[in-house]
Every structure is written in structure tokens, then in C-alpha cells.
Image 1: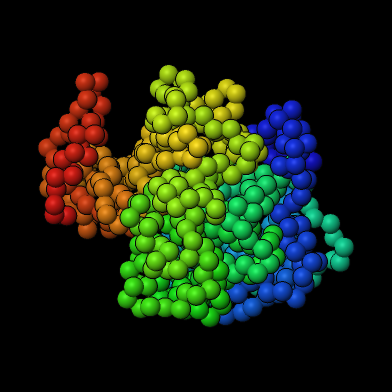
Image 2: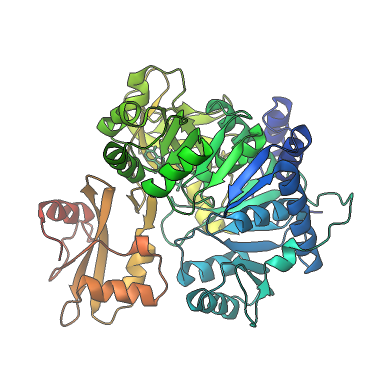
Length: 541
Ligand code: J2J
């Protein structure tokens, strides 16, 4: 079977080296679960939706879903768009896919029809698994089906009434043929993740079984996971951080227990932590703040918690310092990207490193360059763009030939667009970014995509979306608008984006009307000048 069309493999000599050095072990993600199930079949693997599944049950359910996908005509290499909240159907779909060789495309729960239609078309999805049960979900499912002609089946969870969709339960109820081998090979694409780091519409990141297994194994080791670990998945499991760094997949590999939280708010999470004796959790910085505030107020029982991982956006030093005194657990900073490279502070690092840096690369095979505008390496201590390649970093976005020509160097380094400083000990400090993406507390807002939606509003002549500093979120968004006639209000623009099915985290926090934009000498919109005016604005309109 050939490799998936639109996927850029590593050059063969590099792949051979990764195998020889033991970074790639020739495993598949389906067998990660099978191996743990063989070791400890009766150990609790998953607590979700009010149910507890041991490893043997989860392993068997994964085989059922794989059989169900095959029975619906899905073939190895076919793409399956998955838009599900944290819950049992998400995990079952994922492992069903891994075993059937079907490639899940992991949309985030916050995404709406604008993003889902784009992802279904870009991936050429043969089927979708969506949340069912309500009129809103129904409308979403109908839109996706009608707008992406490759989609042959729409599976919906929940209580499906009579309708055009196939109940997800028919997948779970399928009878696996005992002894059916998995349809995936280690070098195959296992999953398509979404990029938060590119301009324009989201791109798809192919991750192979070998590379993602390397990612989750090394992450589990650096976070100290073992069979006694109880991980709370508070962030969306569809995001790389919660999925495999080490998250759900790393915990399953270590033989521990994963508790899926329906929401990341402190009240929900604190209850689950106390009840399930949770030991580890990963959060984005605004949630770290929310948990700290709530813990001081509620004095919850967090005595089981040993590790909090924080990543997705820059964690402030003052916040980092409060973690142990308030939550009673260790902190690990994680600077990662769905494209691959992960950096972690280590569990035995001095406090100063943990509080003030975003850690160092996970693997000794990660190559990291910090370069100036001329593409030459800058000395340690100076800020430059991070370029990277390694055993779990992509060599090309899926079906994005033109974009790939500039996103990668000729020798295969991924240009991250992040501005970082490398300290003499090798730890990195994230200083900012070059790309037009606003990091709103870990949610990545693609500037160009949102501007294009706003330009479609009848009273918007021109628009520029810029980030402004915010104490809780790191950054929030302001849309500067040159109106056509009467200026639209923020409410007008939010309604417009909602009607176009754009995820709520992309809605502007503020809207300001201007007669014209400041321009740079080259005639481009001077975003830096807009950011400066924005910093002096006190009132949101
Ligand atoms: C500053 N910026 C950070 C950090 C990511 C673990 C953790 C995070 C992600 C993630 C991930 C940052 N400090 N600690 O996939 O496995 C910004 C950078 C980066 C971009 C990637 C993981 N951690 N960032 O956030 O693909 O700009 O992955 O390039 O969503 O988030 O975004 P994303």
C-alpha cells in the first residue's frame, strides 16, 4: 500500500537513523493500547461520561469500532472528520481509526461550520463523527454533509431520532472478527492534527504512528507517568497537548487511568480530582489563573495532585510561583506545537528554570536552530526565530505544496514563526512570534481568516485584527474597522461571525472604527502603530 497522497515523508536515510537510534520502534498507536491491555487488563483505563472502562473493555471496544468503520466501507487511508467533546465516543473513534487504518481529522470542540466545512473539504473526508442530539448539532451535520461532496457517512452520537445520520452506536455494536490484524503500518499517517500556528485557514498536520508513538512515549517519561498515574483531561482531547504530550495517549501507554473532564472549570475539575485521586493535569495559562483563584477561595482537596503542566501560551513568572503554594503540586512548563517539537522543564530542574523558562527539547534527536532574519544562527541569549526538525516534527503540511515551499527550509527544518531565546543551559524562553496569529490564552486566532470573514460584512470597508495585552489571557483581539457608512458595533460583528459559523474564540474582544489605517513606508497597514493606539484605549466599545 502506498503512503497517503499529500503526506511528505522524512528522507529515507533520516528515517533509517531514527529507527536505528530507537526513536521509531515500528509500533502503531492501536498496539499502544493493546500492549497495556495485555499487561493489566483489569486496571481502569478510562473514566468518562459516568462510566469506568478497564483496559480489556476499552481494547475490545476499539476493535468493535474498527470493525464498524470497515463495515461502513471505510478503507485504510480514508479520512474521518471528528468533532466531539471530551467523552467516550472520542476515545473509541480514535482507537477504532488507529486499528482500521482510517485517519481521524481532529477538529476542536470550539469549531463551528465554517471551520468544519473547510476541514472536511481540505482533508477530503469520507465520513464524519459529530455530536448529535440537538437542533444545532443537526444543522451543523447537515451543512457539513451538503458542503463536502466526499462525505459519504455522518455518524452522530447521542440519541439519534429518525434522520439522515447513522447512530454512532452502530459502530460500537459491530462484532469484530477475532484475530483481524490492524490495517495500519508504523510509517502510515495515524492522525491529522490542526495547526494553530499558521496564517490563513487552519492547515492539517500529518502525524505517523511511529512519530506520534515516539512523541507520547518520551512525553510520558519526561512527565514521570506510570501505572499509578491518574490524568485529568481538562483541555480538549483533540488538541495535541491533551492528546499526546503526554495526555490521553501517554497515560494509556504508561498503563495509568485517564479521567475525561466535560469542562475545564475549577469546580468541575476539583470534584473530579478529589473523587478520582487525580495526579496530573495539563492547562493553558488562563486556566491556571482561574484554578489558583478558585483554590484560594474553595480550599478543595487536591492532595492527590502531584504535577501541573502549563503550556499553549506564555505563563507569567508570578503565576508560576503560585502553583506549588496554592495547589500543592509541582509545575512543568511545556512549550509545544502540534507540528511536533516539544519542550519541557524537567521535574528535577531548579525552581528558577521552572518559573522563568519554557524548557528544553524533549528528545536528543530534536534539532533546534535559533536564527536571525538572514537565516544565520544567533548566539545563545539573543532572540531569533526557532527552526526545528526531528523524529516527531512534520516535514510538510497535508496537501499544502505552496505553503510548504516557504514553511520549511530546503533541508527540512520547520520554520516555527516563534521568536525565542536560548539560554546557555539549553532552555528556551518564548519571546513572541513572527506569524500573524494572535495567541488568546492558548487559543490561536488566525488573523487573515478572521479578517476575511469581517470583510464580508456590508458595513466593513477595511479591517485589521490586532492583539493587545491582557493580564489574564496574555492577549485579546481588537478589530480596527474602516466602515462603509455607519460603523458596525462589536455586537453586529459578533452576530455576523456567529451567522457565518466561526468559532467563538475568534470573535473580536473589541471593535474600534477609524477613518483610515496608519500605513508603513511600503504602504502596508502599520499593525504595530495600531497595537500602540490599542494599548492606550481603556474602554471596550
Ligand atoms: C509560549 N508560547 C507557547 C508556551 C505553545 C503542548 C503545549 C502547547 C501546545 C500548543 C502543544 C507555549 N509559551 N509554553 O501542541 O503539545 C505557542 C507557540 C507555538 C504555538 C503552538 C503541546 N506553548 N506556545 O500550543 O499547535 O507560538 O500547540 O508555536 O496549538 O503555541 O500552538 P499549538
